Image (cartoon, rainbow, N blue to C red; front, top):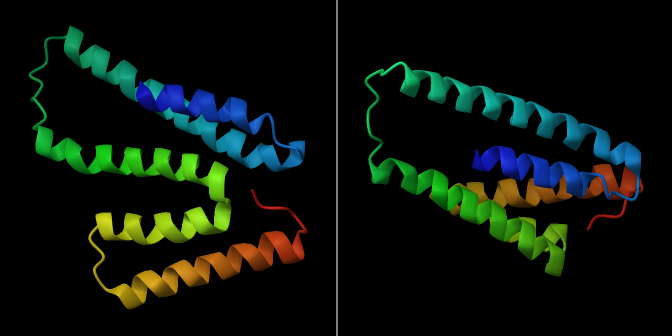
Length: 131
């Protein structure tokens, strides 16, 4: 249900884009996320009401997803203050490290490669201003 709330929140934020055409893809993705999350909640409710034997999830299994959600929220907040490129340069290596990547050459290469790709595609070619 938290993901449904976040999807609705970001859908509303996408509505405030300066270029309405740029909001089409994020809105479509957010609708799919909200629909799939709703189906997951419905499935959980059905299993619970049927009296199905549901296993308790150990808190250690939730540590990774919770850290990921906190990183994403921090990334979104940081982007408002320092912009896309700086926040992405911070978030991407942290995210890769959290997911188990320990090779700093790979983390640096992916970060620089993504930053260059986004800059060339969106700023140079499409002439969009990044936040």
